[in-house]
Structure formats: C-alpha cells, structure tokens
Image 1 (cartoon, rainbow, N blue to C red):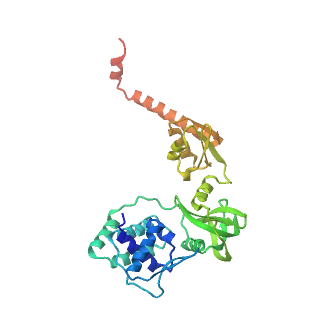
Image 2 (image 1 turned 90 degrees about the vertical axis):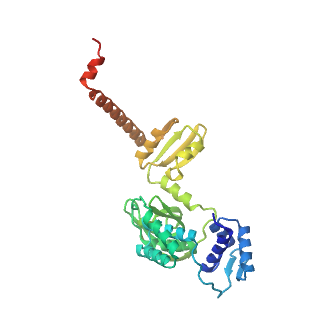
Length: 336
C-alpha cells in the first residue's frame, strides 16, 4: 500500500515529468479520487512548490514555468517496480530495443544506494520467467508511431496485408493499441471500409502519418472491440454452443478473449470464430452441465473424434491390464 507521503511525492514527480496533467489522470494513476488529488495539490502549494491549476475542459495542473527541483531518490518500492517492469519487458520480448532495456537497467542501478542495489540485482538473478517467444516479431517503430497517433488523435496511412496475403491501403483513425496473447492489435475507423476495423500490427507493411485528425468516440471500448473482432471474425465460420447453466458460471469458465456469452431463455449461448477447435472441444467435454452444439459440423466431428480416441485408449488400457496379470494369478481365481 502507498503511504500518503509517497503519493504526494509521486504527484510531484509526475508534474515534473509532464507539462500538464489533469486531475482525473492523476487520480487514475494514483488510484485515488479527484478530491484527494486536490488535497495533495494544496499540500504541495503549502510547502511553497508553485503548482498552478488551470480550469476548463482542457485544464489541469502544472508546475510554474521554469521551476525545477533536483531529482528525487527512488524509494524501495519504486526501484522494485521499475526493475521488474524492465525485466518483464525484456523477458516477454516487447517491441523495445533490448539495448534500451539493458541501458535503462544499468542507469537505474548506477544511482541506487548499496542496499537497494543488492535488492534489485537479487530480483534479476532470482526470478525465472517461463515464457514462450511471441508468435511474431513486431517492428518497434510501428508501435511507437501508432501510440503517438492515438495520443495526438492524428490519422495514419497504412498498407495492410490480410491473412490471405492480399495487400490494401487506407487512411486509418487509431483509437488505441491492445496487446493480447502475444499479438499487438489496433482498432479504429477505416476510411476504406467506412466502418470500425481491427488490424494486427505485424501485418502492417507500411505506416506513415497523415495530415488529417480525428476525435475518438467517448464511449468506444478499444479492448472490447478487439476481443470481439478476434472471436467473431467475419471471414471465418462461427461456432455456437448452448450452455445449460447460469451466466455467472459460464463467465467463470469462458474468459472474454475466448468468445462472447449471451443469456437466453434456456441457458447461455457461447459464440466464437471456428478456430482452435481442439481446446474448445476439450473444454466442452470437461464441463459438468449439459451442452448442446448448435453449430458447426466441424466442432461436432471434433468432439466425436475425441470421444472415439478416449474409448480406444480406455479399451487398450483395459486389455493391457488384463494381459499383465500373471497366469498363475488367473488360475487361482478360476473355478475347479
């Protein structure tokens, strides 16, 4: 848990690192309410630190122009958080230059006191990450350019290669970037299709800033749109399964990334693109409530195939067990 003093110093650090920050953004980062942020600002002002407040739609807080404080030392918790963050980025192979990560770690270690230096080095030496390499490698500059376009609400021009290998060009309004199960996605408005679209970043062939700007809809949920796009691809047949259970129990089994859930009169309908049918069939077989396959036929065949394999394995195991009984043992139980 953060102490009030730590939160206060964090507000000061954030204001020093940025030209201006809104009260709602400070509240979100510190996980407090806006009223608490105002109290921290007043405390800083009482300490003689010239924090200025600007009202209005685009208002916020900032340090008086030209005012600088010497850099503050990392607390133990901040040093641990920073080190773990950098190591996780390296081990999960985020699209960041490895040299940049190692350089940041080295610079962080150089300014730490001895006792804290031993602690952060212990984190690096003692923690083992069992992670798989990402399915695809991503060009760092694409992620950086898209993130900047999202922040500045600037359109971009992209050339995109579809799953089938066809390439197309479009002007795109990026509303956000999402990392999901090893892949990076962006979602927003596509001028070519004149509709909302989701694109995988590793399939972007070329990307450049466009002179146009856009306004992101306030109610648009980037993560939800990306997950829905993944599980309900228009170019792939959809599976549909009725689960005879409650929505709460279905949500405990099927995460949002796996597919969509819809409550109906006699249960819950689960839908997703008809991909990765092996593990979907395995999950359905393991459920302890009735399940009905509405579509597709391919899923029915997959379940039937798994059932035949299970029966074959069970029969083979029974025969092997019978053959392994010693003959003398068998004779001892036969009637004379």
